[in-house]
Image 1: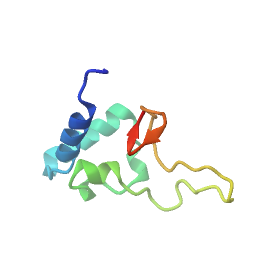
Image 2: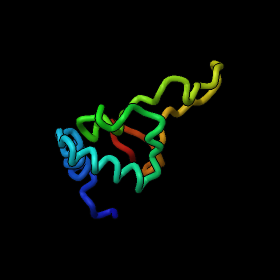
Image 3: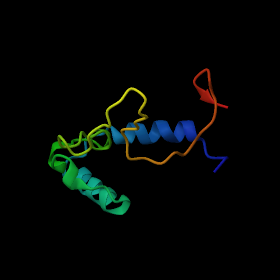
Image 4: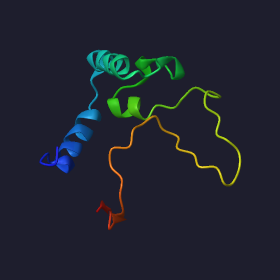
Length: 94
């Protein structure tokens, strides 16, 4: 994994995610959701999303995940896994 050109790969995937794919794209979104356990009942219908970028950044339906109140509460409003951690310096993890 260290030898993969992560920056270039990330840019390629980002470009592909922004492409409008129509019906076949929605089939891919549904396949992705099934494979990775995305709960599609928490968002608008897939027909609303024209690109994978829109699907990945989809808003949840109102009231599903209320944010805990308080000024000292740490909140991470994403469904994700941490793949990198470290000190950031000049926009890069070191």
